[in-house]
Image 1 (tube, one colour):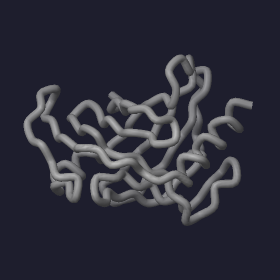
Image 2 (tube, one colour):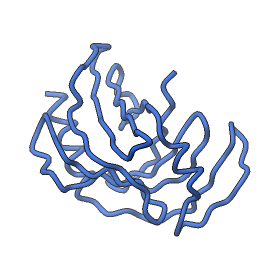
Image 3 (cartoon, helix red, strand yellow):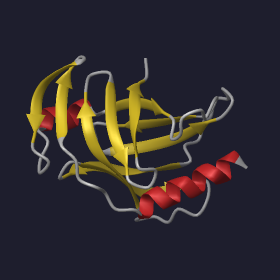
Length: 149
């Protein structure tokens, strides 16, 4: 049932637009550079490559989302529930940043009815070495992605 809930949330996120917001880049935990919404420097985009953990909603308990953004432009997304290890990502594709918006374009989905060619989008609020803060228009909230150890 929870997997179905996440599939619907993800599908709705994929179909929403993005609200624009200022973007900042940080080194460690201190603000170092304010970036234009139109373009992020290659260094900031490259620093986004890695494995990230986050929860969509406060109090989701043991449900974690894990996204791996590769430096080659591909991504995979896993949903872990109750601490269970998940081998197969529920969806994957290519990623890029356009005008301050993180775009995860779906190429393949294992769960639900997320069609290839659809995209998940989030406005990028802040990027640090340890976290990425994005704004989810559907949920009308900021979501902090934490770099996996």
